[in-house]
Image 1 (tube, one colour):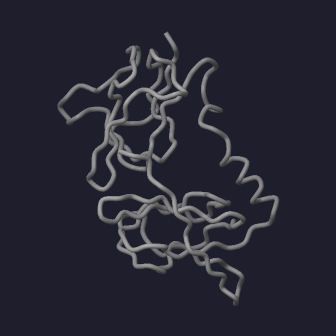
Image 2 (image 1 turned 60 degrees about the horizontal axis):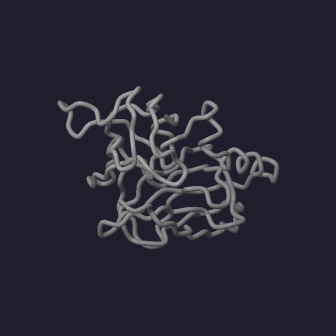
Length: 199
């Protein structure tokens, strides 16, 4: 599965109270809303829209920030039209936005033991460690993996894609030292799934 592409949500300021209405830039099935009370900053993920088998990550435009004050949709799959209000942001002061931006920009590697590397989820979805419930897991802790080895599957809108080991930021061969996601659990884009160390 290719990495989801990103599109800015539409932003409209409510002249009565200064709140921001975040509107859908497309027609499709919307999912992945943030939590009420969460502070979103420039380029934060707002959710995702799937249409005609293609998933698009929705993000805040540059220089826009605020605290989620109201969700207009459930955190499930909801049909939306162009311009549909997805959620409402209330303004935050500059220091609060800066603090939220700082925590957002920490890389996944900040949470790793020294000398370790992270394999992260390419998208939001359901994480599966095995091809079917009665089958063994693709990999276990202690196993050595190499380029192209399937580590797990991730499911988005009934479409299953393999998470394979490899990439320019990973060693050619490594031992799986931690598995940080539960089987059949929901995971977020960029969430650490496996921690590996070179062998």
